[in-house]
Length: 124
Image (tube, rainbow, N blue to C red):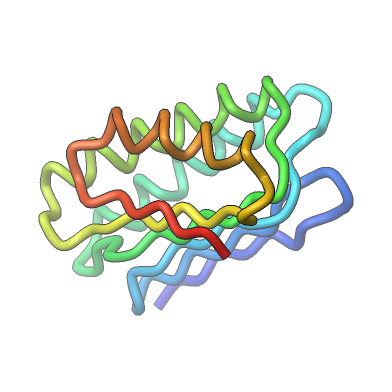
């Protein structure tokens, strides 16, 4: 069983990928210089986790804030998940946002409109 974890900081997200449970979690804040490397590496890990017997079943995204560059990075992650979701009909994405955070709600709505797999917007 493989688990991949990145501890978050004041400007980078916490990441948890658990191969056995099939759960991916991203949370916190993503507002750091040049997030491209971070999100490309994360996309590779997500792809690698789905090459074996275990598949991603649930993705929980709980960002408080994404800067514009990080939104582009999340585009890459979600495109990867959308591709995997076509092969894995059991996958669901849950986008959590604070009720008062209109910006994160709008970003989630944008992504849900692009998704061909179940995508839940959850006000917390």
